[in-house]
Image 1 (cartoon, one colour):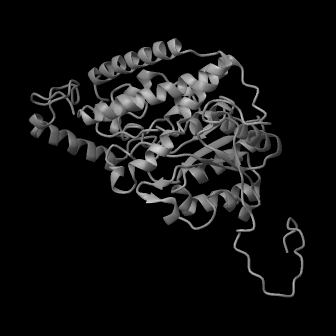
Image 2 (cartoon, rainbow, N blue to C red):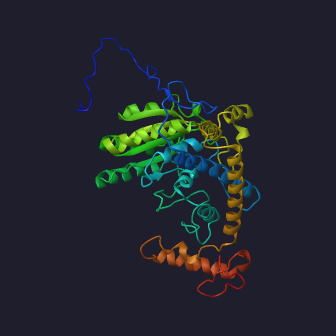
Image 3 (spheres, one colour):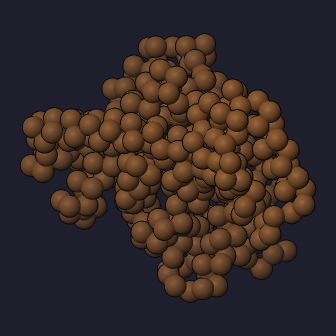
Length: 403
C-alpha cells in the first residue's frame, strides 16, 4: 500500500460508488450586473491593474472581430476567436507573475495582449511576414514570445500539457519561485497527454496550474458526448490533486482562483487543476459553422453572460470607467488594429532560406537538397509566385524575385 494513502475503511457489503457522492461547487464573485454576491470577498485589485485587464479584454475582442472580417475578405487564410472566453484567459494570466510560463492552446491571444504583445507583433504572425517570430512557418494564431514567457502554440491538441509538467519540474529545480500554467479546452482533456501530465505533476509535486476552459464543445462535439462524469474537475481526485471549479465568465473569480492556485504551486509545490466554466460564443474557427450543431437560442443565453460586459459594469460601479472611456478606447483600438493590419500586409515574406536555416544547428543535406529543389521549382514557374520581392541566391527568379 502506498505510504501517501490513508487506510481505507472496511465494509462488508458490495457497495459501488460512481462519484455522484461528490459535487464540486462553482466559485463566483460577480453577478452579471457587475455587483458582488452577498458575502463575496473580492480580490485586492487596484485600479491600474483592473484597467490593464479590461483593456486587454477589449483589445482581444476588437482584434477577433477585425481579423475574422479580414479572413472573410480573403486577406487572411485562417482565424480563431476568443469571444466569450476572455475572462478565463486574461483573468488567469493577470494572477501570475509576468515571468511565469504560459503554455496555451490556440484561443489565448488575450494572455499575450495582457503581457504586452503589441498589435504589430500579432499582425506579423497572422500574415507570416519577415518580422514574424515564427518566420512564416506556422498557421495564423499560432503565436509565441520568449520575452513574454509564452510558449509557441502547437496545433495538435494537448501536446502542451505534459510539456508544462516537465517545464514546471525544471522551475522547481531552479527554485526561483516561478510556475507554469497550461491552458486547454475540455476536448483536449480527453487526450492521453492530459492524464499523463496530471499524474506526473502529482507524483513529482511540481508548480504547475492546469486550466481547463470548459466551453461546452470540442469543435462540434458537445460536452455530454465527451464524458458522462461531472465535468473535468473530478478527475483531479484520481491524482490526489487540488482542484477548483470557477465561473469562467467572472473575471474576478478566475483571477482570485488563480492567485490561490499559484500560491499552492509556488509555495508548496502542489499542482492545481482549475476548471473554468465558460462558452465559446464564436465558431470553433473561421472554417466552422456552429449552426450545424447548436441553436441560436443556446448562444443567446450565453451572450447574456458576456464576461467583458460583466467587468465593464463592475468598473463602472467602482467609478473607474465610463461610457466615454469605452467609446474612446474602442475607437482607438479599431484604428490601431486596422493600421497595423495594413502595415503587416505590405511587409515582405521571410527570406526563403529561413525555411531550413535554424531547424537544426547546421542545415542537414536532406534539407539543403529540398531547398534547392524548391528554388528550382520557383525559377521554372515564376508566374505562380507573384508576390515575392527578395532574390533567390541574390538573383531574380525570372520575374518572380522570391517565394
